[in-house]
Image 1 (cartoon, one colour):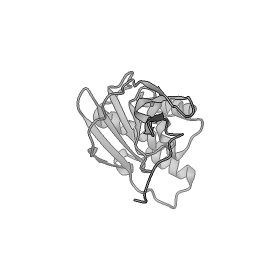
Image 2 (cartoon, rainbow, N blue to C red):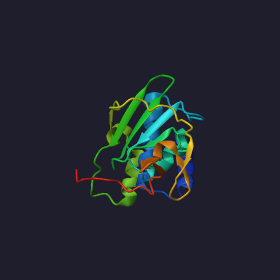
Image 3 (cartoon, helix red, strand yellow):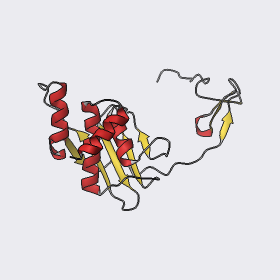
Image 4 (tube, rainbow, N blue to C red):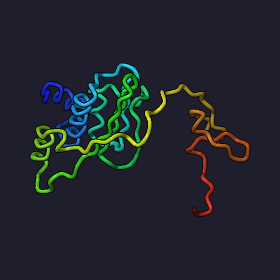
Length: 174
């Protein structure tokens, strides 16, 4: 384990915790299994299925960020990460295996940092293709609040362009 990199992740995140360790170990596994390096652009993509502490380690170590468009959040509530390498075509999904419940927080942290990745994660191929590259979209002004929103987040209601905050979904129950 790269202790210096772990300490950088702790500093970036703000504290040591098992969640950060999960993301850290996911990055170590992706580096080992896929040869991933830091991504200054969009060559490496990570799809995270959670918005927990581990995502901070992924941003710091892989260079995958929301702002660059190579960190995508797929809200499933799972401790799962899918990595893609656009150059090689390689991909890898990993999901955290159940952890022994009898461990306290500190024991869990040490276990996660020191156990082999194969003991912590189940590995497979993602069941979806590499996401397309980020696009720069036109900003459209909401005709209710006057705020700009990306065009793919605008809805039409009675002929008006409306942002998601102002739009009231119409539903008949299913």
